[in-house]
Length: 256
Image (cartoon, rainbow, N blue to C red; front, side, top):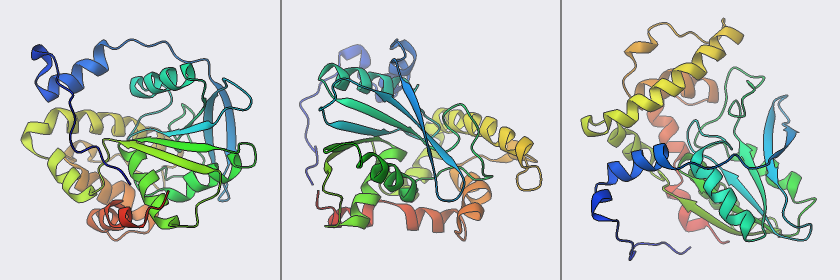
C-alpha cells in the first residue's frame, strides 16, 4: 500500500499556516452542487443509506466516496473531488452515512469510524452493476475504507480495483486526544456544534433512547463518544471504541 510521505507541495507564503489552509479552503472555495441522482439502499437491520450519484459514461469505472465526520455529498471537499473525477470520465457514487443525507435515519444510532458493514453492503450492491469499483475516503470515511480493506485481506470482491484515502485518523485515540488540545479547540467546537444539532434531532425522534441533557458540558470526543457512540454500538467506552475501530492495526492486511 503506497503512502505519500514526502511531497513537493509548497503553499504560497500567505497560506503557510496549516490552520489557515484548513479554514480558508472551507470558507472561500465555492463549488456548485453536482447534479446528483439519489438512490436509497436499504440495510439488513431496517435502516437505509442514501447514495448520491453522478453518471459520466455507461462503461466507465465507478468511484465510491466516503465523507468525513458530519460531512455529506454536499461537503465542499466532496464536491471538489466529484467535479475532478467526473471531468475525467468516472462515474461517482457518494455514500451519505446514516443520518447524513438530510433525512434522519430509522435508528437511534447512526454511523461511526468503524462502520465497515455499511460500506461493504453498498459495495456488494454496486458490484452487481459495475465491473470496476474504486474507493475514495476522507478522514473518518477513509478510516472506514482502510479498516474494511484490512478486514477483507485477500478476499476482496474482484470488482474492487483501487482505493485512495486522505487525511485519515488511523489511530483514533491519538487523533481524538490531539483534537482535544487547546490549540485545536476551534475544530473541536465546530464538531461539537454539528454533533449537537444531530443529537437534538435524534432526541426528538427517540426521546426514550437519547437525551441532550448536559450536552453543553461535553468538551471533547472522549466524552461524546463515551455517551453517544459506544453504548449504541456495543463498546465499553470511548477508548474501547477507538481501540476496536482504528484502521491502523489493519493496514498490514490490505492487499488491494
